Length: 429
Image (tube, rainbow, N blue to C red; front, side, top):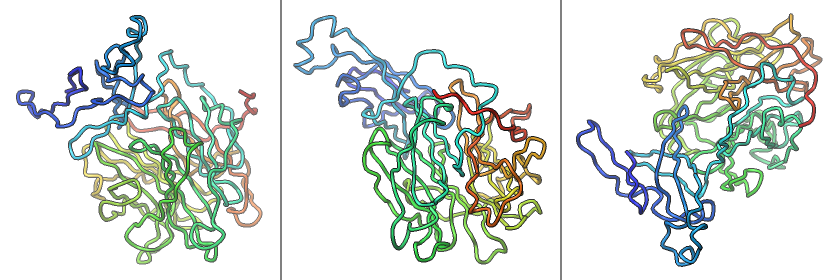
């Protein structure tokens, strides 16, 4: 329970609604820096969206004891605003970063279009679209040269097609992070930006591991990206495609990695995080290539993506080689289950998203999830518009980023349908 104390927000916790314990540190007890007129906030409200919670609060300069504000005329003192920040819980304590306010658009969101113009972005594989609370959509993907990380943003998903990409990091000339720069994902965690990506060594290009960059700027296109190094997963082997999600106050990492003791190329692993860059416990294997469709050309489970809906945790993943055989599989667990128990995860025995010969779309995979402005769930993935590839599929640059809506069945499971056919290019926005 949050209570406006006129010196911040008091936080009270109860297990039975009869006995309440006050948190030692109040929320919003000190003025913020500029973004909310430098005053103490009050009159709180909380909104929960998926696995994230947001605090709404009211400010006006007349409530601050600051001498400068006391000199304002009565009109200025009554001027008010609504601020929004994300709430975080750690070890039973609520906190928020009031110097990182959220963009609030009080207008009615436009409905998601029934169809998006596809491909959305050409020659960008492993696409990741992150919708942030500042009102922007952020996009990253693997570039064909495998040599750099690009970031772009737009107010709409369609706008990403024409948004100017910015190179924010380049591969090293020697040593780790020197080759095969793959599958970048951008996430906003505890008030900072993090990019997870895979990279090989300049001299040993297949010594691929997962790495992290960090940026504390409000706009990730600004500020400095700091290398936080390799994620230690507990053993050294081929590893890639890390992603992260939070559930019930706990953050997890999911990724693909080779286990030399198991036949095949890569399996999926899950572990709790102590911080965005460090595991809090040992990894557990939640999937390995066991069905024939996961073993075409290569025995692969990779590219996990997480969607929390309808009381379940869904993890899609990509299977098999990177040609027309590439497809999506699906894992799911009850939201109340122990996610670190491999037995909690159920696996679809058949792929859930595959090549569509009829629509001319081949090898759909390595997806991410995002939402339209009206909250509709969207599938973001790459695919080619032809089957036959000359040479190594990894050297073919034409894996294009595509977007299409997700349907939901009556039992609460996602229906991804089939890859939609290509459409005319979107007009500039």
